[in-house]
Image (cartoon, rainbow over the protein chains, first blue to last red):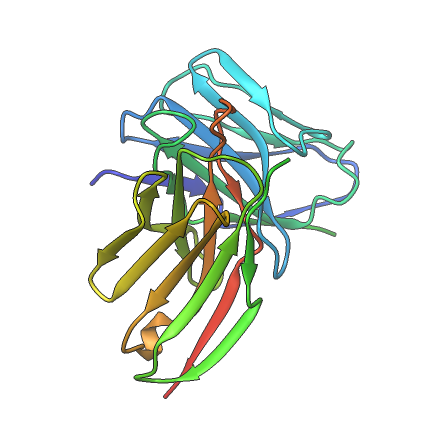
Length: 113
Length: 112
């Protein structure tokens, strides 16, 4: 059953803590993406990766970090430097970057207490 | 950065009516895509239209693209309650940026 998974579905974090969101895909896609979505808003790109061991900052990378050690996995760490991390986080993958269709995971809702 | 803008922000219609959403963008594109998002879920790809295409159909969906006006429309015919969702357009960048840029979305409500 091919697809893209995110865990956990809900995550609560205390202020000052780092937290890592998981994203895994078995679609054999080269490109992976992390987006942030605030209530009633569109998607803003945090980071993206075109290939293993390489990634680029998106529009709102400050306070976030990523790694791409395996093709299947693209975890996102929300650090304590992110001033307002409460949001819905979406991971996506595509066969190629740029013009290709993106396939999305179900999302992780992060709440800072 | 380039961004699509959807219009209207919210649309409420009766079941069976047609729904039309519009998207405008700023720079040259290779293609434009439409996605759907049910509340609290991930996005699902609906349709992709290339810059050299003017119209495309998929089931009850009809997408048009006018590159001279830098705009696209999504028409959903014979709407159903299950079509209630947010709809987003996404554009690439013909100048080479390897990413999509999503608009703010249109929230569509179909009343039974």
